[in-house]
Figure (cartoon, rainbow, N blue to C red):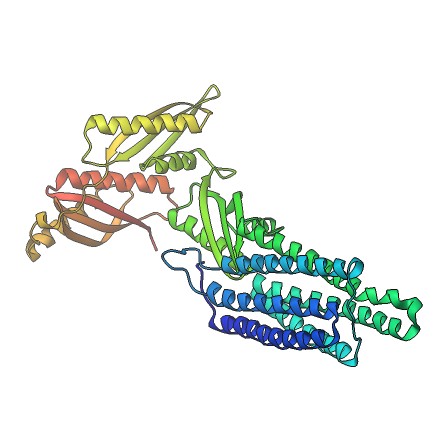
Length: 475
């Protein structure tokens, strides 16, 4: 699975971020005006908080636009971490704001007095703020969950805390209003506005630290909690997976990157192992949604693997082919005889070295084997079309077909020669033919008869490159 962008998802994320910017502009302006009119530090703190929300919303808006850009030559894993970087920037901005709020609140609590007017406008602006924040936080949370966007989630978290902080400011203004109505002995309630500002700062600090910790975790490639276990569970459900090696996961913005190793039967073909890896890729891609999955395949010995399969796996690892593998058990020890095919252009010394490597590898891999003996055979030479002989005339071809048919008919157990094909090859002619045999005959016997017929044809007919006989059961 490769990284891809969804235009519809990009538009939804941009629209959510833009609506956040619009709401932040409206609330910031409203709180600044009313805060100055009433002299409420709680409202001014909320105004600055909303101002920082506006900055954060702008950062989120541009971060979402950049993070959705596809990978390029310099950013081969995409731009997703821009979202996490924007969340970290929001955290720093909010913490700086909290320093000023706490300083000013302490000044009003202990060192200076500020007249505060708890008017209907102060209560109204905070009520409007709560309504707008509830609407924005729900919309942003929905978009963040749908598109797995930390930047939108950070914005949503801001506005969720704004609801509580605005509620605290309303309580502070209410106590100020009571102090103005209950008399001088209740004048200490005026300090409630500064206390409310401290509570707001505390909420913002707590939320900022949580958000900052998560942003730093992603920037440092910390694995999402529990995701590696879920990936492992999904991979083991795929048919052909014998086991798992390392599983690594990390996140960048809305994208998740998964690297894992799966164990596959070492006797499987390259195509078969690739199909297992593709199946793992598809299953994990459904789990993570957007992202990239890299599956590495490790060959392992399967349970119940017989000796011939084990030898074939070892020879494949060395780039060799084997056949006619025979094992003999004598006094509890196993002796293996086999035929090994090597490139025809090797010298005897080179071919012997390759065969010796195979013998040593089999002994190392199969502890129960005491000795290995190999018979070296050359692989067929590469076909060179330029050296092909001329096509046979009709008369010559008919005569050759008749000779071949007669030779096969003389092999006891084979008859009904048909489907004879003669084709020019690199160093002669290739012969392919079909013949019949008893359907109840053991396949080993049928193979021996076919080999005998092939040797007879080679011995009695010159100018042939190779002979292939396909034995079929009598109908």
